[in-house]
Length: 291
Image 1 (spheres, rainbow, N blue to C red):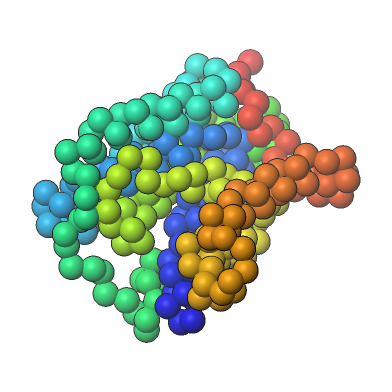
Image 2 (spheres, rainbow, N blue to C red; image 1 turned 45 degrees about the vertical axis):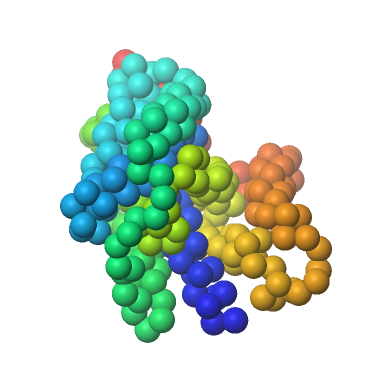
């Protein structure tokens, strides 16, 4: 049972990293549905870099850099050019699916490096995730920078008049969001499941995207959601450890995605919008053109 819990927390950390990056993106008014693609790039290039250098640090840095690059690319299309943010994000996802398959194919197989040591039996990335959740909550709700980010996501015109650079804030958000998604992908391929294969993330980025909406754009609630989905994901892999004989493991494997769909349906209802709509950044997904 302890092993099941530890693995669940490892999965939760990955959802937390990717979700926090997207949460900051959306608080600044930018929607990136291409998290899965950025995670694939981070996972693949991080895996290749770590294997060739025999260094986890090099792999993680490579993932952060490719995530930063892709975040800025999405920012260029969404902020500078003002194109549809969903289209830009989907383009990154499709590119990630195709290019990582081509780039990573020669490296198919296990990482072949000694596993990163745990701390107290838990992944060091889990502790890092908890620290980041607290730090981002404090930044968003207790600092002037957080107020600027939220202002830009709510009403960029008013923020600009108040002396806030909407472009600078939004580029900072997409840069951070991209780095976190790339880092999440690397944690998956270097620690959680250190074996490269075609499209091995299997929808984790989309679950992280749904978590942001589920969290009502609050890092603390996002952490709780990540823990829930981490447990559900691990349960889908090893249901016999907790619920032996209850349904097929293939049925359990679709549970995280079924719940993701239910969450998306819930947040799109009139009841949810009426009760919780104020939590959603008002300018989310809308391009801002300075007059």
